[in-house]
Image (cartoon, rainbow, N blue to C red; front, side):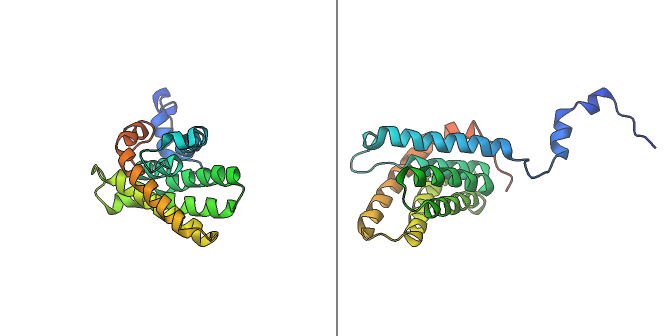
Length: 183
């Protein structure tokens, strides 16, 4: 028995997208996350210390991870963390695996925060920004311990503070690229 469909049913894009649940169903969000994350790392590398606010310098890669994770969910946040870790680890040449693992886990944590906190509360992006910096730096320290741990902690606290402040205006830009997560 053949089911006959009208041309509107055959070419309806929404029904095609709603039926698709394969492994690449979130590929558009992952590509957007990769573009934003790599652009943030490139911007950070190009401007460097010129971005400092007082004594502290923001970490734009981790800010991108936090905002993508908070707006698009834990899977997309983990992908953003992977791309930031890959770019940062490749640029420094030290502990590539540690950078990738710590940033990926931090992106996953950032994606979990909106479901644990108030999803649309204005402080959620700031909490995510602080959590990402601290989680990523702690993870990197566990994967590749350094002798200058005091300076690493003080730089992480300063970057977390500045990223928390920058999270408010930056979230408005990121929300344009990602739909609210369903996680």
